[in-house]
Structures are given as structure tokens and as C-alpha cells.
Image (tube, rainbow, N blue to C red; front, side, top):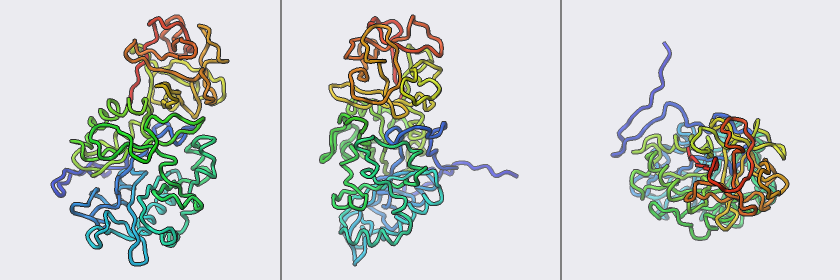
Length: 423
């Protein structure tokens, strides 16, 4: 008889916890295809090491499950560790009280991540370190784990700040699937860079708001050419019912949307994964990877890259809303409340930089020109207006049928109402 895998409810330490039948999907249903690292979302655990199985409980505990179970059972693809020197080694530690606050040696948990990547060659992982260890001790302990250097993705070596983040598939093909950030700034010669260089994030202790974290660029930091810093949202338990799906959705859409000019997070960090809100975090990340789609006039037709094309000049059209990669748009701030719309690593562009009504829209390399800048006039008909031309994204002739190529036209409020859906 075939065994049915059903979620298991447990009462643990006063929390209702949900053991999922299978890991949350790490990739969207259409696959990574040509999505770049800043076009996907990863499930993160705050202080993923701080759990009883890995040696930390009580008032300094942040998680229920071991780090191994978080990764292999819950779809966690990013985590944070606090590290301190201890007796000639480096240990995970949530504080500096020897005994109570120390968990396991760092290399043991690091090994779990590296082994997971070795067992799953199509997965990527981001490790974030709040690191108080010495450089020498850190690398002595890290090097006890074989194979991590071969997996390490070096964003400087890949010239991410010049070329933008690579496609996830390119990272997989090159077998460079481990990205490590540190709070220390002295480890770049080993391919580990200070997190604030490549990430923006909100302050973790600000309740429901999205407020910039000190020492990091603003959440609405404009992109620099093709490069934008990854957006991380700390979504912790100082928010009531933090892990409930509806609470996550409401916060990201109503509070973080204006603070980030509509950017969707690349990393969302949770405490107490699997507690109270059940599988809310896993479901939300899974849904977020379906993409941020734009629907016109409530028609069920969405902004779409024709045939998933990535060549410059590929037409932008409307097609049935399907959550596929060709409709997975990201808003990228460029200043003055304006943004680019990016999919498949390229931008929505007015052909030839022409400002005349009727000019068609295309996919093109992001080049920071006025033909790629947009404002969403949510209080004025939900129009997507291009400031350079003063014209709006339009369905020619109001023809709401799939396959219609889009143009710019005078902002007249006809078939120009674009609403975005987070999930």
C-alpha cells in the first residue's frame, strides 16, 4: 500500500509546529530558466544555529528544528550564524556567556550546508555571518570542511557590480552555488565580503514597519547600472502572528512596498520556522517565486515577454496570466520614485528611445536611459507612465486579446490600468 505523506502537527514548548510532508519548493514551477539571483526569493532562518538540537535553548533560542532539518526538511536556502572564538576554535554563539549561549563548533554546521549542496547539485545557498571570530581561526575551522572553496561564488571575481547578478542557472552550471557574506571586512581575499556591500536590509527590531538598518544603504537604493544589491527583509517575532501567511503578505505589500519602491525581497528571514504560523513562510516564498505579475484592466491578461525571449528587441505583449518566468517582473529603483521593470535580466524599453505615441515596447539590455524608467500612478488610474515621454503603457486600440504587443500612448485612462499582484 502506498504511504501517504501528511503534515504532522506537534505541540512543542507551547508552540504548534508543522512538520511538512515535503520540503518547500526551492525553485518556481517553471524552473529558474533565465532568472538572475536578484530575481528570486530565498527562505532564510535568523540564527538558524540557535535551536536545542544544535545546543542552544532557552531565552537565546530562535528556532525549533536543527539546521540540518531546516535545510533538508523546510526548504531553507539561506541562514545566519553568530560566530565567536572559543578555546582555540570557532563556535556558534548567541551572545558571549560561555556555556549557556554557545552551541556547536562552526565547522560542524558549515559541513551540513556543504554536504547538502554536494547532495543537491541544482541548489544554491547563502550563508550570512555575524562574525566576531579572528580571521585566522575562522579559515582554520572552515577549511576542516572539504569542498567549500570549490563551491564558493565570488561576486567580485564574477564582476557582479559591473555585470549584475548572474543567472541562477549559470551559477549551477559553474558549480559556484555557495555565497557567503560576513560582518567582517577583512575576508575579501578569500571571496567572502562584507554583507553591506552586496545586500540592503531593514532593521530587525522595528515591528511592522520597513525601516533601513544602520550601516546599510537605504532600502530604496537606486540600481547602479545592471547591478542592484540583494534585498533582505527581516521578518521576526516582534510582530504579532509573524509567521502567518496573511501577516507576511500584508507586511511585504503594505509596508515594505513603499519603502522599497515596490521591490520584492530576495531573502526573507524568519524566527521560529514552523511554529504558530505553520507553513506560512514556506508557502509565501514558494508563491513569491512565481513572480510579481502586472495585470491590465482586471482582464486576466498580464505583461509578458513573448515566447520567453531574451534577445534584445523581443516584443512585450499581454498574455494570459500564468505566473511563468516571462511574467516574473521585478521593480528596480532608479531614483525619484522611478523604477525599471526587469524580467529575464533585461528591461522593459521603449523602442529606439522614441517618444511618439504608438511606439512599441520591447525587452532590451538595461541601460539606464529614460526609455526604461517608469512610475506607477496607483492613485491616478494605476497607470504605468514613462516620465521621459510623458506617455503611458498602453494596449493598442483597447484590444484585450492575448498576443497584443504593447505601445506607449497618451495617458487617457482607457486600457492603461495596471495592477500588480505579489502572489
